[in-house]
Length: 113
Length: 112
Image 1 (cartoon, rainbow over the protein chains, first blue to last red):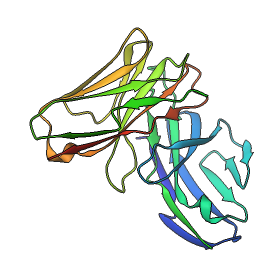
Image 2: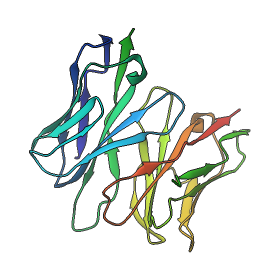
Image 3: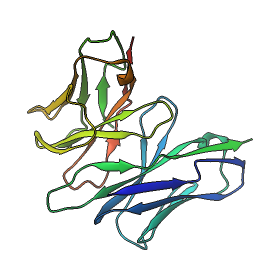
């Protein structure tokens, strides 16, 4: 069964304190791994898509990396406005065109000023 | 830039009533996904459509149905509403290449 596990569940950092969020996955053929940011009561905001092991993408203070088993979202020198829930999701491939995108439970990130 | 539009943003219904949620995709997006998100929960996949045909089905109750129309917008129909159906309902849309899936702002359904 396809599965996505994120850790930690919650993370509190001081402003400027860099850290990483983890997303481990088991899927039958990875078509894509997505990172989203979600603020309370709002829809997930797209951040990155990664397709193959070794791929990296950056956006401002965020950098996402991918291996065959997991992805990391590195946050460098975070600011209070980076506080949000970060969701990891995977889309698995199959001959039957398995379209669903499966989400992990997210990491609630809180940056203290 | 145009985004995914969901309507209504908020909806209050009584038990056993019916609700219809609408999702208007980004132009040229032909794939729609529906998700249900309870308080403090991750989004749970309900159903998806590609080119107006159902492409996958998740944990969608039999009381719910959905379709995608010729203009690619989608509607989620929910009947015999229960208190436990109260949640945020999101749709996301993408193109066939699935390089990015963008979410709408959601519909907050409250069943009383």
